[in-house]
Image (cartoon, rainbow, N blue to C red; front, side, top):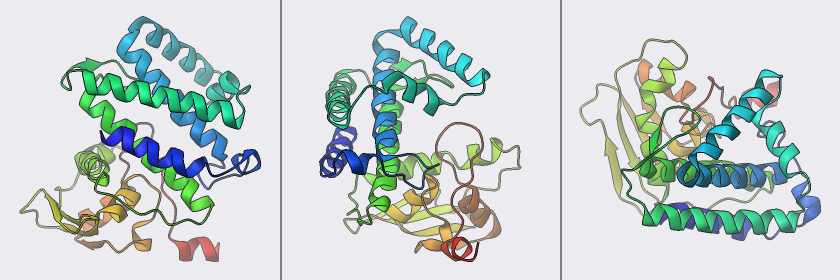
Amino acid sequence: MDFLAECEALDAFVSRYGEADFARRTDFYGWTVRDEVMHLYFLDLTTLKAIEQEADFLAEVADIRRCQAAGGELSDYMRERYRALTRDTLLEAWRETYRRLAQVFAAADPKGRMKWFGPDMSLRSAASARQMEVWAHGQDIYDLFGVERVPSDRVRNICEIGVRTQGWTFHNRKLDTPEAPTVTLTAPSGGLWRWNEGGAEAVEGPAADFALVVTQRRHVDDTALRVTGPGARRWMELAQCFAGAPSDGPPPKRARTEA
């Protein structure tokens, strides 16, 4: 399945790097490589708990809410919980957990539902969301080490989430939602993927670039995307395909250079 393949690809990449490299900081809120992998491990484990041990999951959510109410963040919670893990034990724990979660996803009814931090979600949506997180946080690590990731057609799942969250991006910011534009993306394998055909405005270009924008890993101006229409442009400036409070993506490189 795509979630498992995404995890294995990132696992193979990060496993090249040692303990010192795991302490290096990415551009994602200054998180270290260790933080990035720990986050993936924590959420995979939490997803398993939500599917198999709902009462324990809800108790953990309450603990996290108490941490946040006291001024902490989810990242603080996970660092405190897993601070004893070394680079090797963290990788092994993450590897064991994502493999087990992939087995659970594969065996479950994809239309079955599970509790989550926000609204309940289907297991199919949960699998796509987990893949999206692995892909996005993996990009932070690739960027840190200056390695260009070769995209695969698995990125379609991230693009699908990005398209589906167009309205939510605006609703989350209490803004009027413009009409959804036609989205035409070129797959890494060369085919075309289309959504919302017939829209008056448009977003076109490489699928991987679209995924980078909706996961807030690139500003639209730093991609090969072609955006037609003010509503589509505003979406690409604000796009946020993940849950949580409104978040701003990176500024264009020129603005970062001039700052």
